[in-house]
Length: 273
Image 1: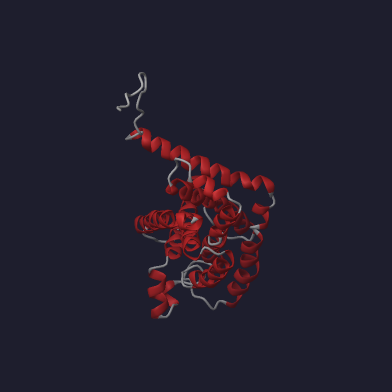
Image 2 (image 1 turned 120 degrees about the horizontal axis):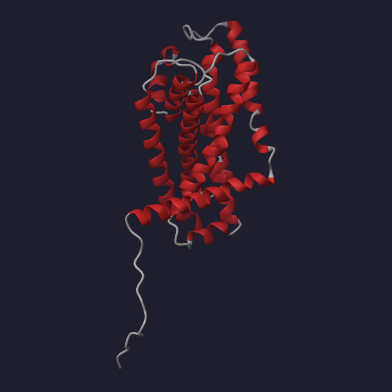
């Protein structure tokens, strides 16, 4: 017995080309908006996030400026330190982002999101973008505090906007690194321990606190493969005008962010199995 197709049934083709790109951008934007709306439940978060960078500048920065134990050339140590503290603050915000994914899994939210037509990469990219937006507030806060402390930093709004973009890229990578680890360990407590174990090594194995020239050779090698070092380099070039290689810095951050999105997207489904 043959089954005749019903009259009037029209096949709908999947979007392709520009429509597919537009649909992907809209999905990423929707996921990012959902993440950013969580700030409405705790509006003080952005202010409390400023406490740690303020302490680093007020206590560590001013103390080491007076001790003069770190040679930063013609650049005052506080000015040298400020971009590094911006990058450090963004790192601390982003590196535990995978815990939110596990919370979503435990609440049943992630399973519902994974059955939608949106690919896993849209969800990961949206969360990474939201992590970047949360982190850019640190740029404004640290720059304002630096002015209060008498540190000469740029007042060019375009350079400050570019610095925000650099921080967003760096935050996206570290948020994706955290989500990748979440897909591997699938346990909140384990992920918290791993995050705490790698945060300070990432920070100290970069040029955030001291120039690469004063590092031992083995630490220089680690700094070379640490994306945080390239983020700090780009921020110093934009905010205090130190000589940098902006093409290399931005390229490394973009490649790291794309690789992080790909890795996190590939491992995301392991969380809902």
